[in-house]
Image (cartoon, rainbow, N blue to C red; front, side, top):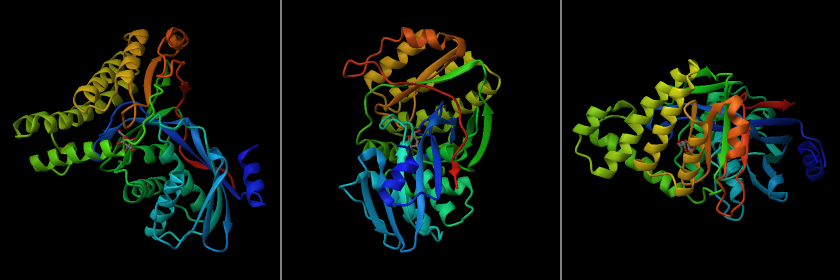
Length: 376
Ligand code: GLA
């Protein structure tokens, strides 16, 4: 059944809008976004789809097609409250709460949600759900909300309500993606510069099969360490620090290492945007390798299975391209960039197996446009 058919079966009327919001893969720039730094993600073809129809009674009633048709409902005018029985709905609650708090007059709605983004892969299924909900609800209420504002509200919904103190990268990549381009995002100004992906390159995503479960605590701890380092140096954010300042500051070794990751990663993103624009896959490969090493040794957010998968991909890809873990860390997917004419050979030679001994999920991706309506 299509999403529209599932919607009609559940709510006895067809949807009036269907929105889509892509997942994202980050090519480089990890844990830099909440430090006001730089990231280089692209929106990808796996996505969330949201079908919706207005209701006159101010209720939100949402059905999760991918969770056996489970339904959650709440009135728009009550403050956010998590529902431990249906954690998937917290992201929708967070988004409606954030939109209402920003003063957007929403209408009640029946909503059906489905998606193709693998869960626990670090490919932003939650951000895409929230951006998709925002896009659909804006259309229902006839509100013209710019992509960056949808992204900000999705981030606020996740930080302030759901409780993961994330940055803006995932939401902005989903909202503002550009076909065939990565996005060079300045997470302080929210300036977004599209960078054309070289036609000679292909993006491969390999899911390690190590699910990123219950990692919000570790994520928030890393963020707190970065904030402590910035405060100790007297700067607003680690974006404003360089290695000389860091070495001069009297930081404990752990905090120093965390900050070193962010300071060096910001520099790598700037270099990667140039290398990508120049079609220089060799330089991209070096930068991706250095990024992974920094995540492994300084920021300590990788796990041994992911390190092994990255090492195998790097060896198979060779000098023209590279591989690194993508996303928040502690499992999830690896992103690789390789010569398009080598991709088949790389994938058929890959021997990596998930913890359960089976072959990993592989996505061969292209960069896609950001969120929008597919039906209205
Ligand atoms: C998660 C967060 C992002 C970002 C990445 C790490 O995906 O949602 O804001 O911090 O981790 O780069």
